[in-house]
Amino acid sequence: MRKYRFTNNIGLKIIALVFSAFLWLIVVNVDNPIGSSTFSEIPVHITNDDIITSSGEVYQVIGEQTVSVTVYATREVRQKLTAEDIIATADIREMSGSLVPVSIEIPDYEGDYETAYASPRNLQIQTEKSGRKVLPLTVSTQGDVRDGYILGDMTVHPDNVTITGAESTLDRIDRAVARIDVNDLYEDAEITAELILYDSNGNVISQNQLENNLGSGGVSVSVEVLEVKSVPVVFSVSGTPAEGYDYTGCTSEPDTVQICGKSEDIDSVQQISVPASVISVSGASEPIEQDVDITPYLPEGVSLVDENMGTVKVTAMIEEEGTRTIDFLVSSIRINNLADSLQVSYEPDAEITLRFSGEQQSLDVLDISSAVSVDLQEYTEPGTYDVPVHVEIPDGITLMEEVTVRLTIEEKTEEVPGEGSGESEEDGQNSQSGEADSG
Image (cartoon, rainbow, N blue to C red; front, side, top):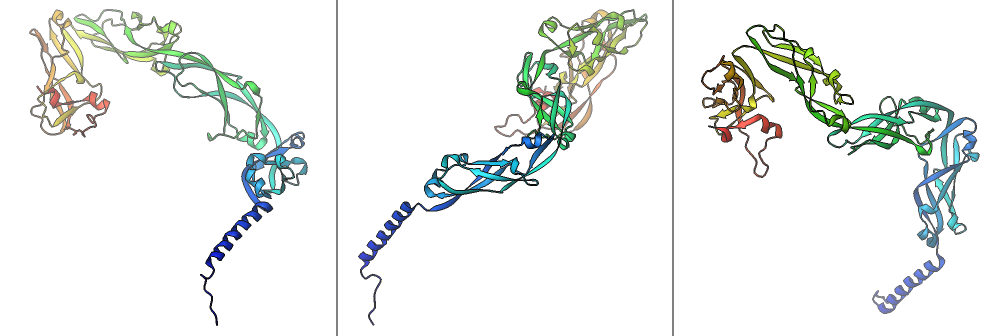
């Protein structure tokens, strides 16, 4: 039997294969066969919904108001077709029960495609009675005003809003908020606001199926912006202390307060002055402590930034003649002979009280700002210690009693190369190292 090899007439076979492929391309392009293409997320337009609304009801779509559309057309048409060419419509007149059929049109390709259908083929509509609810509008802000300013009064226009929609949705609305952006604001302004509706749990309620009476003007907020300033509180006293005692001044906590107001009102305010009639030192032989409400003494047009800071604790210092008491900040104490491997920390704003005796004239001019120190030569282990305080005082003045200061001594934190000191700003203010201050 004669055998044939695949390689026999190989040239003719290759030519035949190429010709077949070429012929197939010609047939495909000439015939332009029908096929399908699917387009997703096509929005469905609802028409003739006045059939529902005219009867005092409202409706909402259950699920998504989009469909996928499958189009059968020639390759040439499908290659040109885009999702924007497709119109999906649900006509309420064709509603059956709760279902409205979705019809598909492609106006620019009318007659150029065979068929098109939506998936799902129906929208599900839920209808219920319509109602309305009137809510007061409150203001919510986002962002921060410029440094040195705070927000004053804010007025909403209008002050309430009427919401209409499905009764079940209205029942969920707990409050209506006019939200504004005040970022970098530094002067009074009228700001267009965004209406936000919340339920009782603080969740935002969608307004897609709701209407309001705000119209094209919407809602706006008139915002007052006030300048902020820190000023000291200054006290005077009346009366004369007991014989042998002197009034040496007032201290207060806090000693400064933040005030706010319009620039023209606060620019001239340098201090809050409390009149002498408020505090009497008549016959006093010891310090007098008193809570004072400073709000009556604020100038017109000026108020406190924090209304809760209106009460100030005042101490009228009464001292025996020939004595003087000085409160000294721990942070100002000079640290001597601290080991290089250790560092010192203490409570922020901690103070010690020093009492001196001597000639009153010398006491009145006594300055110990750089005269207070501690010697830590014997404190070589980490721990918390009550360390004796040394005060350099001139002849004729005596420290009436020995004073100690509570210090915490710790191992010095090692610095990581390239990362600075490794201490926070607060640590830097409230700790001292032996390397810098040893004496």
